[in-house]
Image (cartoon, rainbow, N blue to C red; front, top):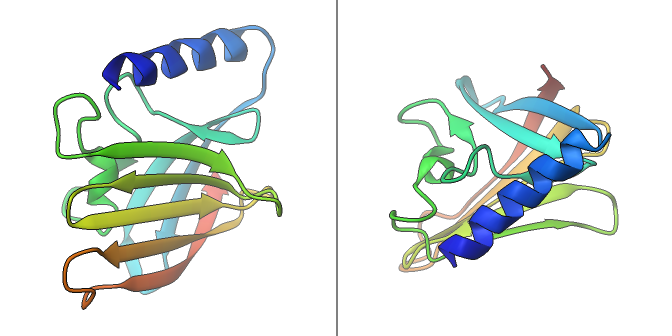
Length: 133
């Protein structure tokens, strides 16, 4: 799995250097105005921030699962994709949690969907405000 993720990062970097469009996007939930996450996009798709991290969230924020080490951390899976409506998405899963983050094609809004896979008591869905930086 770690080799596949590393390969995806390398291929993404090659694509970006070959003329693909890149963007850095910062998002936050209005309910938590001081908690941000910074994401990298290549050709309209979210991609890993670097070889071992999905994104760069603020410390102690609702986005903290995105800071886990993809090779050595608690993440069981990381999936990147694009919905039919054009939203770029990433889902990270641990034994007890799943977090899906989506960013609209306009890069102006998105969503945060947290699922507590254990008790189910901590589920949370939030709208996000995003901006290209």
